[in-house]
Image (cartoon, rainbow, N blue to C red; front, top):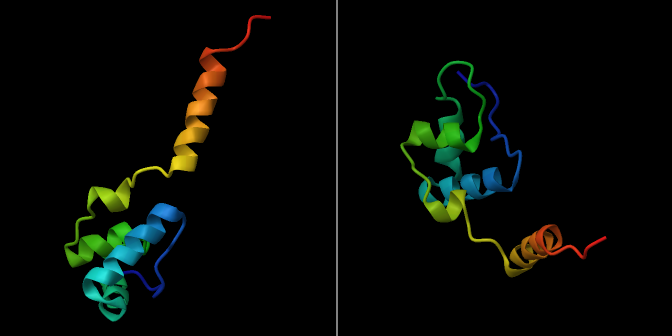
Amino acid sequence: MATQMEPLITNERAKREWDYIVAKVGEERARAAIAQIPGNRRPYPLNIARVLGIRFPESVTNPPASREVALKHLEEIRKKFFRSPS
């Protein structure tokens, strides 16, 4: 059983997952689920969601990229494929 009563938020995706869990069941119930995580599993939001029987929608696990991020990736692709000859 997990002894830590705080969720492990290690990146932006984990933050979105934790926020989704709290929106679905409330913070009190979400934190109570941490104590129910079986074995030596750590309190990552995914493990908490499993205890609660929650499945994350695609918008939480893989949200669309912002315009700025998309433009940055396109620029990187252009640099790779359209280099000026040396």
